[in-house]
Length: 105
Image 1: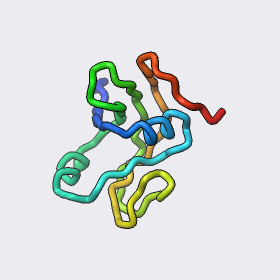
Image 2: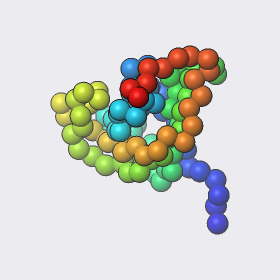
Image 3: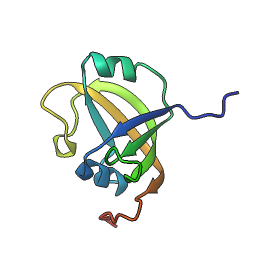
Image 4: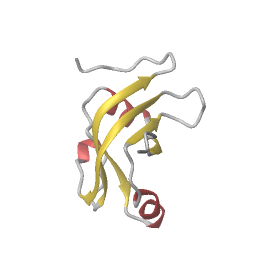
């Protein structure tokens, strides 16, 4: 049995990162194009989101429940076209690297 997690690495803008971290945003979107077709046509257990490309950028690991195609929530950044919808589950950890986030709690 394989105990290693299959991790999808994605970078997010701060607005979407904070919304996911606070529990408001439950989906992430990617365009339906060849690049994402090849990346998302695999089995993943979790998504490792980073807010930036620096090694010290905030990051969080979130359970990935499903990947499907459809129209997403415009309030969560979905465009007016079909996209890949990454359905998110539990937040497994958040490492803000000394950066504050806004909580809705």
